[in-house]
Image (tube, rainbow over all chains, first blue to last red; front, side, top):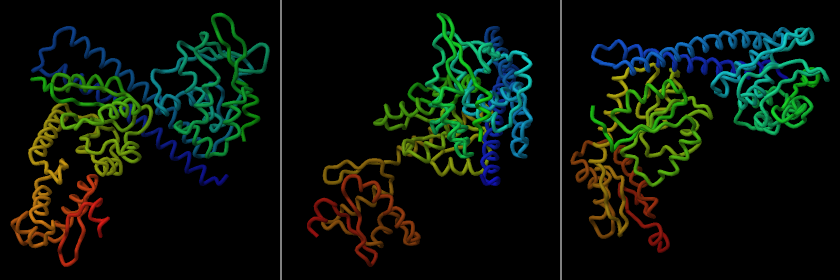
Length: 233
Length: 225
């Protein structure tokens, strides 16, 4: 692929991400300013419950600003590397963090997706490119449909990253919409970057992301990271 | 502050914090309806298709969870004849320009001041009321032609004032403007806008050359000619 074309696509995505971060930041700042003005306006005779309400909103918005600044830093770092064509520089923790952060920004997903990653030797040894991390953004869009914290672990029976969610919360059929439907900008970008076959495997193949096992309470899914990396063009 | 119950503000905003701010500022004055997705907003517009929208103002953020408000301006005509302002964190001149080109009455950037929003909205509703006072209706062969401006009403009545429904530029200038120094293009623009408004009823204004125009019914006159 023409490297200038690729650069243009990634630049467009990074500008979009920057605009979204700016949007979220100013939205939270707007709430902070408003609550601050109202609480300090001597003309307002606010009762205790109103003051508590404004105080709570102020605290939530301040937390949002903090979170958005953190997201902005992660994305800024990631896009700098993406645009300078750096390869194989991410470990799995960084990969998941970048993908999740971008998924929270494009398309807009709230609230946060909470997850943990098992500290195994094999998982620690994996490394990914920034473009590979981009491919996992729709995966996090998919995970956002589940509730509670997701714990990623190394599966005993296969060479895969696995995770459990309460029964029925996630269906692999939903992946097709996220990876192939045009309204999701990341999928569009991956298609433009020439990853169509990989997208189809991620969406339909069920060999990269799929059901591992199920019981009465939980469904266990897998992500075959090695296969994913082998198929990545 | 008195609640202006007959007026509604439809707010497109997906940030709960910003929705809270809007509710605090506008809730005591207007009936406020929130939409956090374009999809829901479009459904509501469809439901209110027959509504005249003189008592509804749309306040829209640009970036929503299922798309960009600008896409409504570009891809669909669903905001035609509806009053809306844009409130966004986007300060790009191109975005502001696109919003105004698409029909936005105003463009505020976040964070905005409480008083600024209230005064701008009051001003827009005042403008709508003044416009309504100016707008009138004319009956054309039994069809009620509505949404005409004062000048358009005068123009149409001039056509209807003679049997062959033909007028000359000089007649228009004298009767509609009462001022012979009006630029010729001004007349052309008003005729163009009147054409657009009577066309859905099956009428057209045809130039006869030499600064004369004739009002014709497309169905009858064109078949006969």
